[in-house]
Image (cartoon, protein in one colour):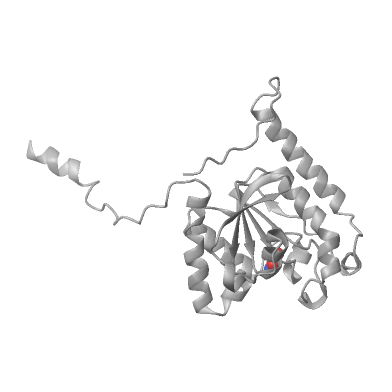
Length: 233
Ligand code: URA
């Protein structure tokens, strides 16, 4: 197994809990700053900035494309149909949304859910890189083409690179980049959903966790056994 270690602050007087608190406050402060962002035209049509959600110290971070209708209204990423699928896929590997961090390439909804434009990505990317710098995840799973191309710095499409992890430096930290199909694309394409599920199964291993054990049959008899044995003596 690879040794993925968080960088130590190297300052002895800071207790283990202190840097976590500092990181949490820094992310909240940064979210507050970004909530007033006017770096691109999308600020004019948005209900609100959709900064990101989840554990500010997550080992696993997901990066999607951009907020849609529901995300723009609620201010939370992946709350629509694609989000429900993401929650299910997480559940399948024993994780909850609150344990990971979820963000998007763009923090504001493009009108009519059109594709992000290059200048919008360029304006918004410093926000994402700063998030990654503050959260320091071990694994960054990119959902779909936009996040994958931006964070890998390569033009290869998701169909070619999904499921292939690569080590990259993001926000000043070495992370494992793990490209995945976008759940919205998998929603209506069963073959893609299968591949996405397969790729998801490798996430615990990439995070340096134990593999999820195969489900064992329910031990229905186990509870009854002691009583039966008691009756024997
Ligand atoms: N699709 C995305 O890429 N991001 C969201 O937040 C919701 C849907």
